[in-house]
Image (cartoon, rainbow, N blue to C red; front, side, top):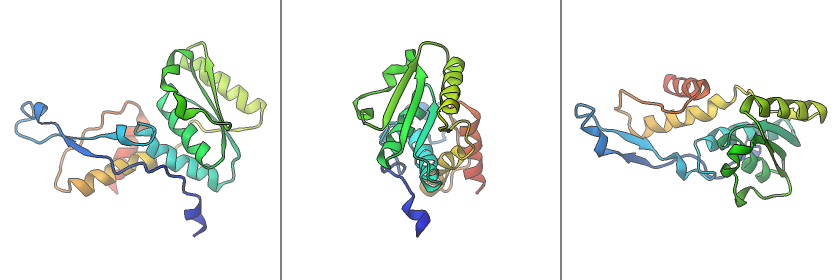
Length: 183
């Protein structure tokens, strides 16, 4: 029961499966469905990842965390960390500040915009984490488990499907889907 007490959730997952008939004419009669990940609490598929990663952070007793992203990951991690009382330092490019909104206003959420490219943001975040002795949450292989949950839902909802298309950029998304589909 101890492990379940560390689960941090905001109700992510179980998103709607939406049929897209307008594109089916290009698929030789195949039916096309899309998981509507915008329905997640932070409005992104990254909520699934955040639930898993922040639950692990809580489980190992982290009080403060540092991470960087261009928006969606940081938005989700900030909200999930805040829910369980973990102080977060979210670094992002200044040009991506539009990903932040009033839902991210909390005493334990710190948003640091860096005027530069993502690789510069990464360096600043890593230096900040090191100088302040705070755990940096990137890169983190546990992200895969959150991505795998989408595959599990696909199989629950469409057990006869033979083709799945994953449109998320980046290797972790693809690896997580493969892991979930393999299981």
